[in-house]
Image 1 (cartoon, rainbow, N blue to C red):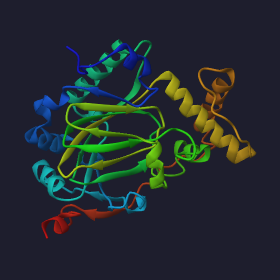
Image 2: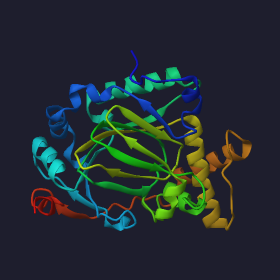
Image 3: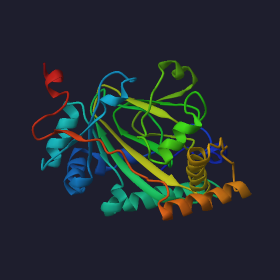
Length: 305
């Protein structure tokens, strides 16, 4: 029995190349009911838990703020997500919890069986628990991503990997970790986006590095974000990394070589050497902690008023 219920030859061929939606059955599993999520929050390493809040305007991405959850029990955190304006991100749950490791094995084994030639690595199954009307601002990811809706409804806009949605320099800066994944957004770009309403039992995937943004409906949302690499995706990331070095150090204007070309493989070697020698300072601009859920729940007072 498969997790995804509507594989077709066309979808298998276009997987990773196009914006695609699928039907799945993960939302029916008890691990995602209130008791299962509360237990998850209790067992997941608290120091790894991402806690965020944000403003209402999709253009004001700098209102994205980071917090901490303290020692609050999982059932309380779940209720805070239901009543406040927070976004809880449990990245790499498959690294820390055996049932999520088993889920990752199940899902990725199916993908590799259904998509000819697909080989996945660097798998990260994250759990997203977020408040009514919360949002994730315009951003892009370096790995490939699929987003699985478990509870609630959210709208996702996925944009082409080209100007004006993202330029080469902006993409390089993200891969080099010079900047955060979020960046400036123009609402006019929505006309070029693929807009999808995700309901429980639906999954969405898009091409590598495609910018996207997300808005929740007026209810608690639970989703799985499954990130992964393939050999081609890893090559692309290293080529972009090398291009960033060439642009910054030599003033070049390099292109992204598709596939396993000689130029592309040479850039992969250069990128790996640069990382090993630490020629390019890689850093993540970690947001400072600005709130603690033990004393402040963003959005709670406004929603209760």
